[in-house]
Image (tube, rainbow, N blue to C red; front, side):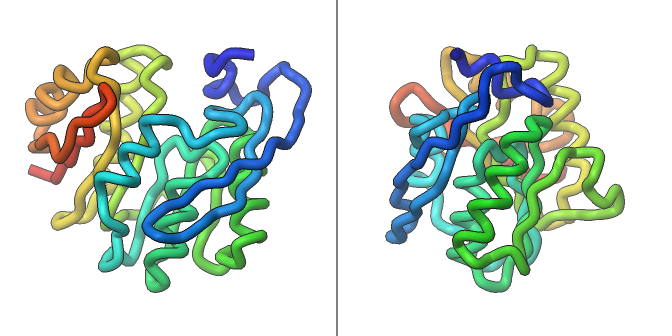
Length: 200
């Protein structure tokens, strides 16, 4: 099984739940991932870089986890920021199921909900967007995805994401700036860029 399955709505591989242990912002998380979902059985390197290099969004009230997988980014935000309401989106139905199951296990379902993109309130806006975006869907699809969701940032909001340098992190930084979302590099580690974008 390769990670290319993870951005399909209904992966063809048999579904098997796989535990994951992660430490984020001084807290330990026992989560469940699964076959056909990105980073099954592990915390992937890029997400690890993002969560190590960025502090928890403690002042945010509304957070979007874009391309949530089994939910680690948005769930860590929900636990670390008790005032935040977290929306998590993924096209992969297994990822949505696992993220919501993990939220229930952590006791944050009152402030966390994962769904497919078409189930999200079209009027919803966000203080912060966190993402390890699905680069392998292709450049145009990625651009469309980011512009669609970045348009929901509140005027003083921000988006923070991690992108591999060899997967176009530097060119994406320049492109987002050209699209009216000034983007800066916050950190660089293990071949990944941590980028921050704000509404222009």
